[in-house]
Image (cartoon, rainbow over all chains, first blue to last red; front, side, top):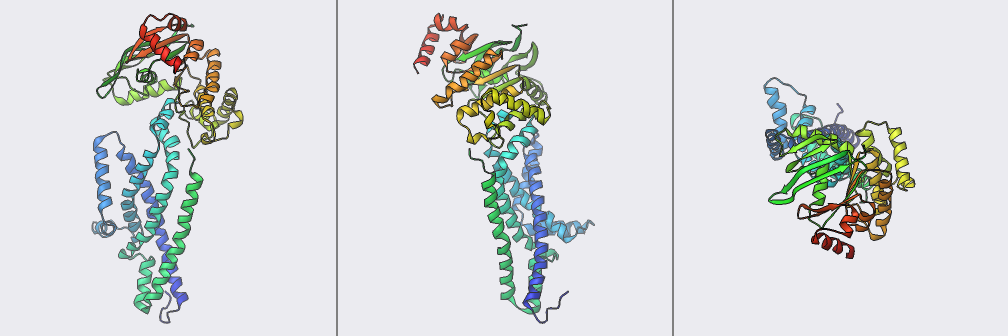
Length: 219
Length: 256
């Protein structure tokens, strides 16, 4: 561990960057969980069996209304209490990813609505099965509509990743709290954190706009 | 056998909510036959056509394909096997839609190869070769790599016809294939369809193009209010219809 006694800004930056790396790890991980789990939720919500649909709706409603921190405690301390020990980073990834998946499945549902029934019928008229219609027609057609909200959810997760500090994950907020406690440089540390976040999110929003343009098909 | 029935629908009824749209229609489509269905909007002709490939599920009736029962409605069977039967049927019964139904994320060529590759299991190279030949037949070989958005309405419908032909179907169903087109593009689509007809393709065509029906059809079916008003050769229907309503409907169309 670097010594903080002389509060060298470069040292502080180094520590924050190390935290940023963990933040990135948590947000990428939880984003992937949300993208995949959201798709599974969507599949369950479209299931031909009513009880499955009900169960999926119930779970999604719970996840969407639950504060992320509560689920994080549940995964880390709750499961820990019954002998299932999950490391703090993985706990954060799971908790953030699942709560986000509740919203992501709504994004997918909206995406599904953008593909007209005529497109599905055209696929069916060729003899494609329902899964083929989804994979070959519906999915590729809805992706352009999904890109902006999914990137948006990723940006949101980079910020939500700060709650991982609550179970001792050394992400950016955890690092800055530690530094502030030892140096009392509140302003400097806060400004650095803000700058790091801005530097990180601006290219993402640019990327989102560029992808939207590239993937969009003029109808 | 030239007059072997390919598709046969008996006692077709279809209700949407409380409205009965088709009220007891019998239709037989024989090999090589061109059947044109005429009638005012809301007469049930499109619904009847869509029941022939089960895009719309009949409320009651029986559907036979090459003499084999495909389904009987109201059906007591599980929906899964019915869906499988419908899917199998559609391999052999292609459709051309009023609004083209091309896939916007695929090029013209990929629109045509999708069915052969993913339904017939053809390898991509062979499918692409055949697709190019089909696009050449509809006069669009040079547009193979274009996306539908960059094509005109007439060109899109010609791609859609090539896509239907690519499945090597036993019959192609046309649902008002020229109704969504600008007037100057109707001709190019109709001439492709005429070519297809003279090549011996079995076709069922819902249309308002009475001239086309008169020249291409082997049999004309006139529908109104969910029933077949009259059915016969173009000469029977256009020159000496037995029903006064038939005459009125056809006259309205010619003037329109």
